[in-house]
Structure formats: structure tokens, C-alpha cells
Image 1 (cartoon, one colour):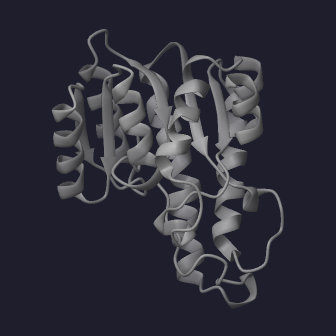
Image 2: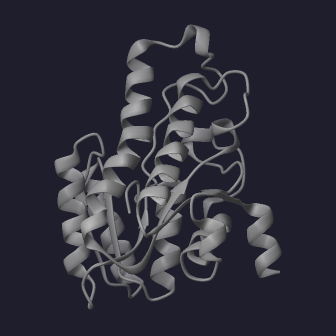
Length: 225
């Protein structure tokens, strides 16, 4: 899992750990990676991690190789590409005033980073593995003030659709609605409240619904109520 030390990624890591899964996390801050591993292990989980900058495919390669050899049975069953960044305040970065540096970094982390995560994971995926990419409505619906962040999330969705079309693995996007993280300015649902959606999508949701699609809160709640 990329971006597994905070926000949605941290909550999803904890949710999988609570289900008995082996969890391997990557993030740019090595200290928070170690802290997250310690926390997961204290809860009884098998966990590992690697300092990972998804802008560097060699970092991602090391992460997925670690994940592949950490589990008891080898290989990877679930990939969650949750690393993300937003330069500026949520809704306060209009496209016509976006800097080139912000555009480039949003694309490299939120778009290309998803591509690198999936591409490097492919050789390690077990049969029936699933790849999940968090997304949001700004990827599909024009909303003022989200600039190149929205562009990068649309890119991530397109990357997921491409891998879904070109591989035999289930690759799809999950839209948990607005979640209260640093990226949203702290406004929205608690990450822990939507983390079970990812466990459901990885284990119980119909492969046909997830593969190449965007599964939202409505579908999750309807299926699990």
C-alpha cells in the first residue's frame, strides 16, 4: 500500500490488519513508516514497510518486492495505491492560476505514481489479486477551484481503466466521498468510517463491478446493509 501512513491510507492499513491481513506500507517519510509498522505490529498484525516516493519507480519496485516476500504465502493479493498530494487549500487552486510546478507534482504523484504502483506490482500479483485506487468526484465532475489536482485524479482513473482493460487482474477505483484528511482540509467523513469499504472491495464486491469502474459509497452501503 502506498500512502499508508496517514489519512485514508493509514485507516485502510489498519482495517486490513484488523482482518488478519499482512500489511506492507510505503510513504515518503521514513519515520512515519516505522511508526505505522510499530502500531500495526502492536495490534497483532504482521507488517512491514519501506520509505517510498512514488515519483521514483525504483522506490516502488523495492516496496512491492518487500510486500511480495513478507506474506506467509508469497506474492500480493491486494494493492491500494493511496499515495496522494494536494498543493494548496482544498477548492482554492483554480486551473487558470495553477503553477506549472504544482501541476507537474500533482501529475507525478497522483497520476504517474498510480501507474508506477500498478506496473511494478504486476509481476508479484497472485491469481485473483485486486488493485484499488482511491478517487473522488472532482476526477469526473468539473468543480471550481480544484485545478491540476482534479486533472491528476482523472489521470489516476484513466490509468486504472487502462490496466483493467489490458490485464487479467481486477483494477478499479473507489470513491468514498469527501473524507476528512489533509487533502480535503479536514472536512468530511472520518477515514476509519470508510476504510471498511476497501476491505469489502478487495474481498466481497463483485469483480465485474470493480474492474475498470468507480465504486462509490452508495454501492458499498447497499451491498453491506
